[in-house]
Image: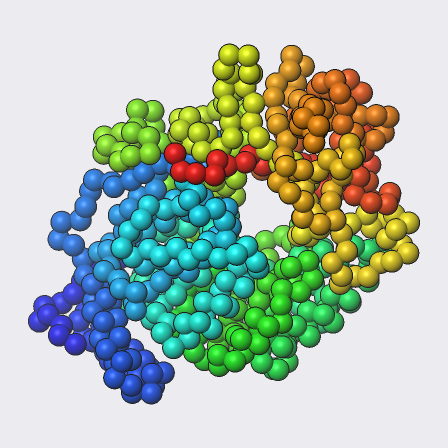
Length: 605
């Protein structure tokens, strides 16, 4: 390595210094490991040289650190508020003062699995090459701006993120980057302080000597991009969401068998994913399956094992394989007995796991400040418009609360804006991305939406206490109804199979007493969601609903005329919706909690 004769200093916020001698020793060690993994091929040696230069660039400190923020704003939802936050393009990992790296495709890649999520956060990471596997709209306004080190691969909408990650590894096994970061389309859901954390994780995997203190279970070549962890136990069947999925398919009197049934299926799939090795009894799960991992670690598992994992299919409800992989990615990447470090252990609450932990430093906490009045919208924000004061809602506890994109909660942000409670200035722009129409002539304000029941863990809804379920229950089956409300022959129900867009699209408008949900049928007649006794149905005359706000932008639907709640009922056959004076199981949110999904416009404005 052509090290400069003077000492390279890395200014940690913990007053830690690294000399060129230590860095030189580490780089020689890194070369040795990389050479073994590449079997001394010349093309690998060329990539090692490229990677080493990148590591040096990461370690150097700019003599004139940029003080002016290069930022843009996004509307986000947290704690039932639509607010505006800035995302800073400058390299800041929250721990060191490292200069922004100059990374090539062979050095590092962000691999992102996307369906309809807002990917504009990628504009805040211009230093890192990014590969997006897009299963959603090709021309969505929610995609990042074009740049030289960004590639978007359009794919059919099949599979979840585990399918994307496996396909990427299999296809690129012989040409992987030195470090790969596997991410979901909206990574803030599992790591609110994602930007600083992903920079920190990537720097650690590339060169731990310049990355600052370790956290959250960092081990050589592997770093989780989450701050929340769960411990699974295959012996007692405490296996998280998999158990909850099974319980939602079993009658009450059989729900106690869910753990034993899932334990057998989980262990079998786990062993197959590990190439035939036995599944460990205890596993620590990094929530969200988001990892920064070195090439050397990925290559510890032969390609045919990844290929076999793909061929297993996604399993029960299209997600069982993904739930197992979420728990064992560290094992797949050669980190035996991996566990999180620098964490606090927390009460389990309702979770079906052995232990629960959360990072006890600022890792994955949201450290960004809110937008202030007078800032420049989606463009660059002037330096003078920011404040260094910490807002009261950014205390330690709330900084870990879930963060959603306003695109994921568009109806909720529109509703709060129209009620005068909205806090987001950027929503005025972002609302134009959706099928939202202001009053014009004879047409009142309205928006196009899909209505969905809230499901926890499960991908399908099943009337588990109905005669239908008792006669034909099978635990690990795909029997069930899709989570979208459709009109079928004037009845309102969840369908058993995918339906055309026109059958699941609703119009939301306002009445003097609340909200109207209407549809245009095949006869071009407008009908309205309402109640006929205890059955939800389509009516010829308007019927008003009140939306009772819940957490995370969810709502209960209360019919004003009939004074009844819209609800599913797991005691009755089929996927019909009902109107009930009382919610049958108020603690079971998915029977009477709904999410209104705004429909985006198909083309970029």
